[in-house]
Length: 82
Image (cartoon, rainbow, N blue to C red):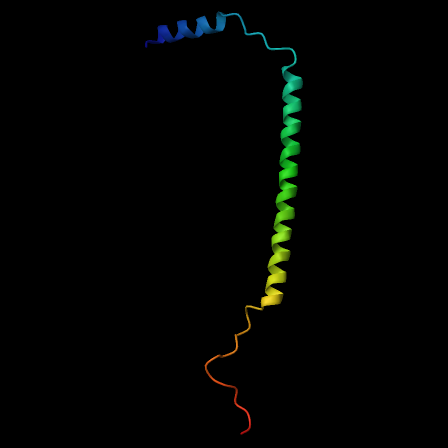
């Protein structure tokens, strides 16, 4: 495509009648944007609550099971009466 062809194509596009925008487009976009922001805020809140619940569940599990304590030996009987 030569320079003249491109210029002619651009002129043709620019000389067209502009597309009419619906009158309620701005209001619809604002409503949709507000809805999206509320959904994101609710999702963020739910994720924080789930994270907090997971932390609490982990702490309760760790305090009841105590995985850092070595389990008692089952092969050697306890030494007593020396």
